[in-house]
Length: 359
Ligand code: NAI
Ligand code: MG
Image 1 (tube, rainbow, N blue to C red):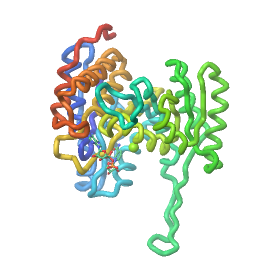
Image 2: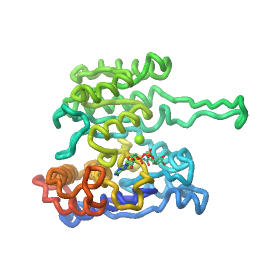
Image 3: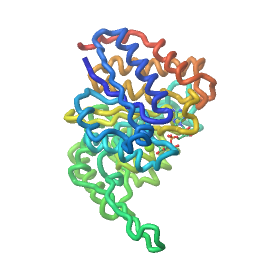
Image 4: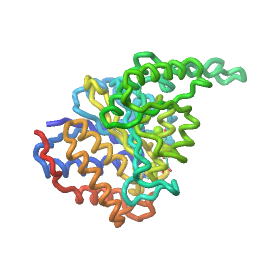
């Protein structure tokens, strides 16, 4: 039995996570070996407006005992974004040492990419986003607040250990899957942090002579993602750079609603967290029209992490089947179907995977 903590969050978060849970429950009924139990934690902005806290003080103690976390999104026009993000999502990512944030960028069947000439085979990248430090470390201050001499300081934190472990993880993935590894940084301008990052990448590349390695500056990387997406296999980058580039990745895939992420604690000391990369999308929240595919795909990543890789692949196959058929399509993909109809269709298209699932 695997215990899953579900944190739906704000806006479209609960709407898309409900569909992921539906698909996971369907897998559970189809295969008794996939035994999942869900607990729900209604943390987020409503909780904050009620109690002054996004989540209770002992939230991490509660979550620690789960096998995995399924997360929706946080953020609301009612509260400043740095509060909602830092006091919930980043607390979990940092507290549970989720230093590998895995974000595939692939073209799904039957979804149009804005890249005019790109074939499906050209776009197959996976971002390894650092998740515990870098530009998101939260180190800084504001002094002389509210005066004309106000100063804001925001310090990025790049440790040798933090940089080495995420880059090593990327090279291991490159080796396992026979793919190149691209490092994205900006060492011409960031003359301390990015220089350290690049030095470590070059050191590590020597340890993996079998893995083709390249380094790009982040601005050029953005350009190449559009002009020559086939350049990329595994891409490793800092917290901020990979955050930005994976929104570009989602756009290349055909929409924000399609892109998943797995926040991994590779040592499995803490539970890993699975979520779509999009936010709470307040302008479409409550209308039942959010695309649940990013969330459902993240649930597939979760099954892979929990040892049910055949079912993980089956969910992705089912997503592709539904998209290929083109009958059920949410408005972001040019259709009129609802979030629930999309979830229903993906759950209904599941078939028994060929490989038996290990118990
Ligand atoms: P967003 O990702 O929520 O929305 C960006 C655009 O994508 C919007 O046009 C939205 O309608 C669309 N979109 C997002 N998810 C979609 C879905 N499932 N189906 C169809 N369309 C979808 O980013 P935005 O607007 O910058 O931020 C909104 C709020 O979300 C803010 O409060 C922000 O702080 C928060 N946020 C939270 C994140 C998280 O919880 N992981 C990540 C990014 C933003
Ligand atoms: Mg983002």
